[in-house]
Every structure is written in C-alpha cells, then in structure tokens.
Length: 172
Image (cartoon, rainbow, N blue to C red; front, side):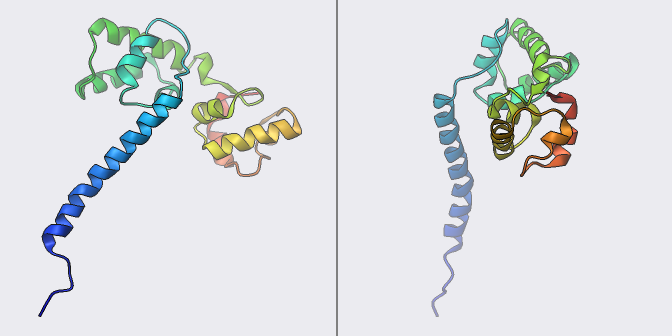
C-alpha cells in the first residue's frame, strides 16, 4: 500500500528552507527600501558614525522613535557591541552623545507638532501606524489646525489610547 503523505525528509527540508526564504525576502525588501529612502537625521557630530555603524542592521525609525536618557543610550550601544557592532570606543561615545542630544527625553525631536509635521514624522515620533498618521495629516488639511488633544481625537481611525500615551510628545 502506497502512502499519500509526503516523505518526512521533504517536509523537514521545507521546514528548514522556509525561515531562510523569509530572511532573504526581508533583506531584499530592506535593501530596496534603503536605496529609495534617504536617511533623515539631524546634523551633528556622530551622525555619520551612526549611519555607518547602525543603519546596516536597523531602520532609522527604530532609532528616531526612541527618546532615551544618556545612560539608556549607553546601555543600548553596549548591547549592540556585545552583539557584534564595530567601532572604536571614541566612535561609540560620539554616537551616544549624538543620540542623547537628538533623541534624548528632552530633545526637540521628542516633540511632534501635529499641525506641521509630515505623516512620516508623526509615525516615527508618536509611534502611530502609517494609516493613523496619514489620517491626522488628511484631517488637518481638510479641517485646519488642531487646537488640543480633544480635537486630535476626533480624527476617524485614531486610537485614543495611543494619543493619550503620546500626549507628552504632542505639540499644537
């Protein structure tokens, strides 16, 4: 009697190939995205090092959407070095100083003016989806500037809990 099930070796091979295919597809998409998207980081000492040492593994929104203290950025850099990031101690110090100045808890980048920011800046700065950020910009262009959180929460498709969570980073 002939079995209707595929051989175990074929299933095992497929199980091994699937993760590899997913990784390669993700890398291809990341490469395509990195060729079309220009890095938008504020100028400053350490910016070029950040682009050279960090963007190979991370998208810029991973960095720009976080607003950490110097000690937290230091912890992050130490962790990345433990994972294999290259760079001298002086380079890492410059990157930490750059990140703290531009993406620290008190940095200007930590605030997003919903009346003037682009959808991309709203997405990165407030941790909203692209659809939510687009809705904010569309509503603003049709109805005028926002005056307060209550007005912002009137946007259809926005999660009010996300707005409440980001209220300290929102400017009008």
